[in-house]
Length: 160
Image (cartoon, rainbow, N blue to C red; front, side, top):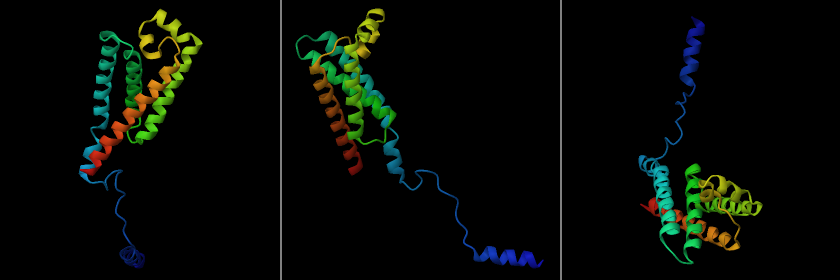
């Protein structure tokens, strides 16, 4: 009995800690709701970008269609990277997307993408077929525009 009274007196004098809160519990509902639609919005933007890119390359004519299609390719890569890492800063996503585009363009120097495209036509859309220096600039421009739009939209959402 003496041990019971000593344990009750020690438990009443000790501090009881509340259970740990789940991740994100300290955030307001508004912040959680604002982050929830990011991936679906990125996916919808990616579908729209694919449609726009295919339309530019197949329906339009002119010297501007190549660089525009390449810039839209970089926008698509940006959207995919942002979908995979939705909490990364736009400047980080931009850097990763542009580097991936450049690596794919440099891969064209091997001739393997051309060989793959001859065997399976969708490979042409993903990997391209021939290296061009100007494509590197188009990828940088497309990635920069995508990152700027993402940063502006994110800032606009945070201000509200």
